[in-house]
Length: 116
Image (cartoon, rainbow, N blue to C red; front, side, top):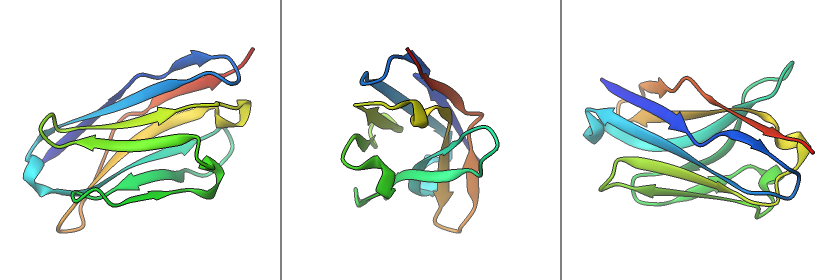
């Protein structure tokens, strides 16, 4: 099994930055793709960005070059650097790991609030 734990959320002013971290533990070798998702109140969970074990990245259109996903395989940690944050980025951000066999592992989420 795999466990993933998010950290780094908080309150930030519009235009500010945050870096989220997702630490994986357990059978790390099972993990292929990792990704960040978010869910705002009253909305469905949506993909923010993903990264494969070989470093191939994918971003949602709304990121528009503001966010950068990265992965440190030696530390079993994935990051999301978020710059130029907007109030509409306010959401709970979740980490997801997908194994080579297609199993999903979700974290508990970390709250990001963008407000003045």
